[in-house]
Length: 200
Image 1: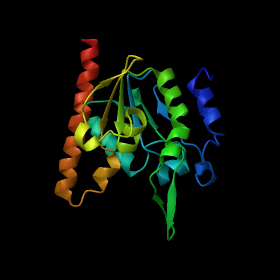
Image 2: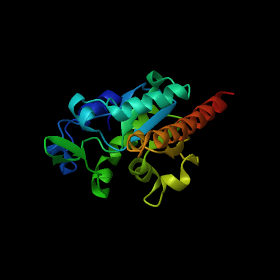
Image 3: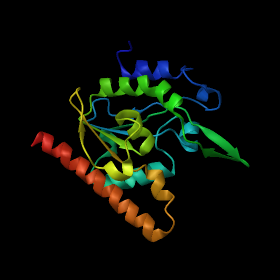
């Protein structure tokens, strides 16, 4: 059993539990405050994250940063990670396009995520998108229907879910994008309110 996040990070760098290590540049482990009250869990690293080795530093990361800022949440005191630690992709010309991880790949990575939650001990875990939500709340979970609901856990934290920031980037037009952004920010405001209520 690894007793610190740094030990887990080092161990995860050599993970061969599924085949994604063969095509990913590197394991992209979580980062942020090691005693964070808030943990954000995305799906998997994207192209920029795979190359840099850091979560949420690409276009979706900029959307996330904007949402956190508008919700009054300081990213520097948040722990950010992904349900799957390697980038799954398919070639499209010279580009590497995101490919959704399957159940076996999510399951292979689950021990790393569980250990992150155990060590950080957040009060609230926010799943960003369906893959993260289904990893932690079960395959039947639907973000479209259950976003914003709170699910108390035996360990003492609550889990909730919202959309993945990348879905906002895929909105069909600027008006839709702004509407999706507003809804995403509102979800994060409710999270902020939940955290404040704990200390009230």
